[in-house]
Image 1 (cartoon, one colour):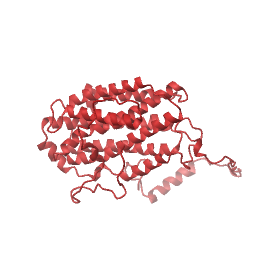
Image 2 (cartoon, helix red, strand yellow):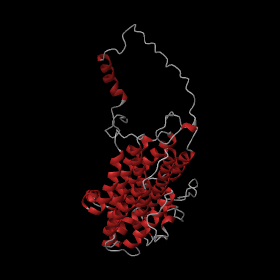
Image 3 (cartoon, helix red, strand yellow):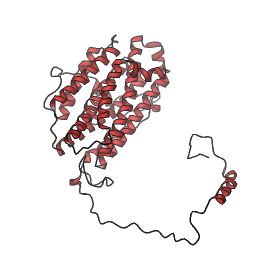
Image 4 (cartoon, one colour):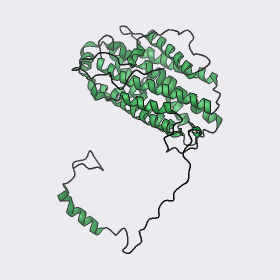
Length: 384
C-alpha cells in the first residue's frame, strides 16, 4: 500500500494490521467538537462583481481578477500553451545505445571535450532559466493566460535538465565533474555569471514595477533572457552536437536536443512577444545604449566560451563558424524585438544554414530504432 506522505518509503502495513492501531489513537485523542456544540457554518456571502473586461487586462501592473482566465486579452499566449503541448516528450523516449558506443570508441579527444562542456553549460543554464521564469517573471504577470504558458515553460526547463542528466548518466560521465565545470572553467562561469546578475536584479521581493527605473530594469532583464539567453545562447549552443549528428555521431543526444530546441525557440518567441507588449502598454522608452552594451557583453562571453570549447576545431565545425552564426541569430532577434538597429551589421548570412532545420524534426525514422518524431498534432510552426 503506497504511503502518500512518503511515496518512496517502504510499503505501509496492511489495512487489517492498521485497524487496531488507528482505533487506539482515536480513543486517546480529545474530541474536536464538544457534545451539543453548534457547528452550523455561515455561508460565504455572494459578491456582485462584474465579469472581467478583457480590455482592462495588462501584462503587468494589472488590477483585474488574476483567477479568471477568459475572455482572453492575449489569445496568442493561450496558443503558445496549446502548441507547447504538441511537443510533449521525455528523454526516455529516445534510444541512446549508439551514443554510448560513439562516445567510447568513435569520438576524438577534441570531440569529447566539446560534448562534455556543452552538456555542462546547458544543464546549468536550464536550471537558471527555470528559476528566472518561475521565481522572477511569472509572479509579475497579471493576466492568467500568460502565467499558464510560463508554468508550462518552467516544466519544460525541468524536463531539459532531466534530459542532460539522462545523457550524462547514460554515457557514463563523471557527474560531479560535469556539473562542477561551470564553477571551475572561467569561460563557462562567465556566461552563467552574466545571466545570474540579470536574474538577481529582478528577483527581489521589494521590486516595484510601477517605478519607471525598476520597470526598465525588468524589461531589460526579460529582453536578455528571451533574446540572448534563450534566443541566441541556447539556440546556437546546441549546434556543436548537431555538427556531430550530421556526421552520424551522437544521434540520440542530438535528437533530444532537437526537442529541446523546439521548446527554447518558443520560449524566446514568447518572451519577445511579452516584452513588446509591455513596452507598448507601459509606453516605455528603451535605452539603446544599454541594449548595445548587452549585445557586446553577450558577444564577449560567447566568444570566450566558444574559443574554449572549440580551442581545437572538430571536423566540420570551428569557433569562427560558431561565432558567425551567433552574430547572425543576434541580428534576427533584434529584428524580432523591433529594435532600431542590429548589433552586428556585417553578419548578413548564416554560417550554419542547416541550423533552423533542426527545430522542425521533419525526417524519416526507423520505427524499430527510435521513436517517430513527426507528430500529427505538431504541424509546422513559424519559429520567427
